[in-house]
Length: 193
Image (cartoon, rainbow, N blue to C red; front, side, top):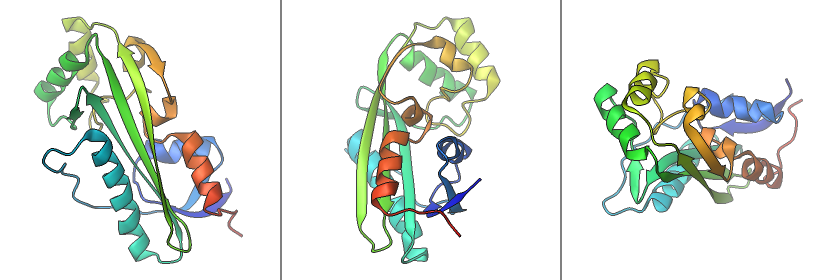
């Protein structure tokens, strides 16, 4: 696989796989270790954009003159950001909240080019989930595929419960590829020699 001259500021295996899916492997992966606590009264769109920007800036400080890509993705029900569940009971509450409702998945992408210019895009996808039975919720929780995710993994068995997606499937997985590819091209990525 050909590598390109950018750094991915994320340790997410899903984001790496999505980039490889469109033949855009980063030359380096450097997860951004930052505080991801939402600010008081911060709207979900402002939060996810701030996270993507801060992750990008954090890694760019370590690698001046390099192209850096960062992303943040959250599940939002109404105006509530769905945080990562810490245990089965928390995940059960999340599944009951999402059951039978339309919710949004927000993915913000941030790229800093070699001259230090930052670009930022927000992708919003609507998901309509079927009404889940107690058994469906229980069975999903037992898979533990939701661990480490905000809400769920759409690329797992939960996909059987999604009635409709309006927007970017790759954005729900964790990296909207259309926006990401265009932003990387605009930043001047090229193959590593």
